[in-house]
Length: 223
Image (cartoon, rainbow, N blue to C red; front, side, top):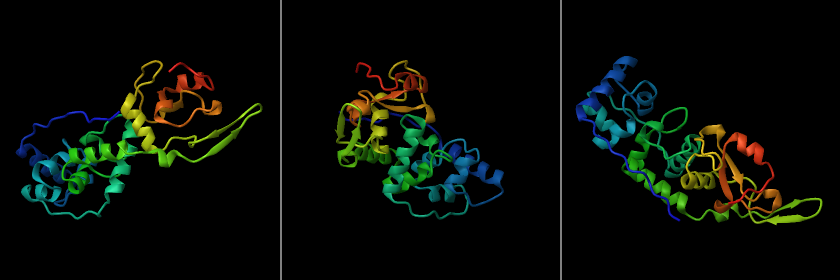
């Protein structure tokens, strides 16, 4: 099973984007505006939208007659790991406006710079998530019980990558009641319980709300 990105569109004029850059800069009393400052201080759009339109954040600043800024070089690995965190935090595919503090460590602009466009950054992330995760999960663990012992092929707790795969497959809805979940209300549950030999695999994981996760406990519900 392969995962695909949702489609989205932007129809915003250049003058609207540049005008909002100036508005935020004036609000902060500065002529040098970073993408994070723009996102965190009432920017009407997102730094990713602006950078994608003009080719880079600094080009947009130049066109808005603002001073250029320099940001620390961030690796592709750091950006992909950050996307994992954001996706898990909000329980769905991130969009431009999600990439701001405190949820995201990096702005959408930095994805544009590193990957050429926000969309290309998402595509690189999907390729990363679709890659084989079994090497990360395969750590033999033995769990002892009164009557039997299970030798697990995987770790008990899913990796961040596996969590994202579950969210990409099921969305951020409880498998049992259909409630929409975000943040700490998302529980990654073993369908066949870990204590009964269930492995930490995509096929054996599901999303549950807090109430159903507590109610299920060590029970094995039908798949």
